[in-house]
Length: 248
Length: 346
Image 1: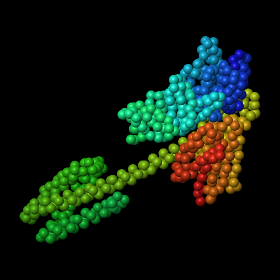
Image 2: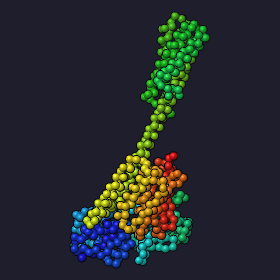
Image 3: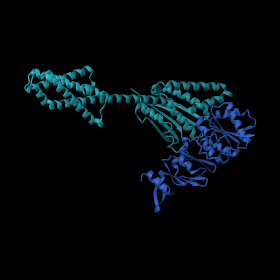
């Protein structure tokens, strides 16, 4: 039995997948969700083999939802996005279906899934850095979605003070808190607006507007003091870059 | 300057008068130097005729060769050479015609420098006038071209902003129809009808600049009905328009992207039910439209989305009314309001 969850905010969009799937007796729909929050909960609870996932959904996008998962099921995207945008996901997702899709196209996706399962080829999405092949959404330049215990937090980019590399993770600092996320610092350096954020050090990225002052504690050695009194090291090249950006 | 705007006839008249004026002056000057009237007049006419040749030469070169600040020194040399040639030719020809007087040759030699300077000044003056005339004409045509390009660009831009239909909307609607076809064919047929009416309205309105509020609201209702099929119970709408607003005019297809934005913003920012309110009122004889959608300020920065999708509308309003203050947004108590003021022509 292939246990399946449908995640789409449009009821009719879910119903067509349900209808097409009726032809397959070895597929069982164990849950339907209308947004990414419900999706994460359901995936944690049911540990499905396959999800049908829409991209544009309330609160968080389908991509952002995938980022928050520990165990990755097989994913078939169902979306009205253009083909070009979805091509980038081909290697990560089992398949993608462009709405509206035919029964024949749907069958092809199922066949592809069966092939992958037979070869015991797990997609292992978690090992791929989603960001590297990512088609950037406008939302992602302005926010970071993180998991905090059982909850999901959306942090607006404007609230981020600094980001620090931390083994395989990064620590995202707001004024009073920090959050962990499995991503690279380079990813955030690339995604966040380069006019607002600066890499001051190999393992530090800070938001320029939260700089309180630059202190030198030895000759040629500097630290940045943020407005929440956090100290961030400043490498020599970071110092040069920062001076250039601030025009001093 | 007189030369520029006059017709060719007028130009010829003025040129002849100018020429004749100088013939008289030169005749008077030569007569005062002691020469008989007949000789003075003949000399003056011949001299001024030679000047005419010089002028026609420089006038024609203006058609092919345009002076600017860089090569002005070449131009001066050129004028100098022309004046010299013309006067030398005159110096040779005039004794043949007026050879009855012995001392005339001496007079010609003595007056050569004066004639040369006169001639140089005269053609220099005319050369400047020709240049000014050419320059002004060129500038006028450049201005005209610039205006034409601007108009073309504006039209093209307006047309483009006009038909900014979201492909997402179309494909998702088609997907809904596809889903309905199997189990609720009647509903599917109805939605195809709604979608067709909506698309027809969009295409038709592409041609006209201004439509009535009543017409635009009908178009919006079609759009909202389609969205309601897609999103089911999650989407609620409330349209209120003050009496008298239905006949007021607004740029076509301006409201739809704002409503689209409100729906997108409302639906994708909250997980619950979304109520969209559209409210049209008359404000000092102008049309004021408020579009409200719920906004979850807890999870998102309030700055985000302020300009989201509204830039093209702002641009269109600017192109049509040359004003930047017609579109405003604000966010309060979990409600995001977009206000649109449409000036009415009296």
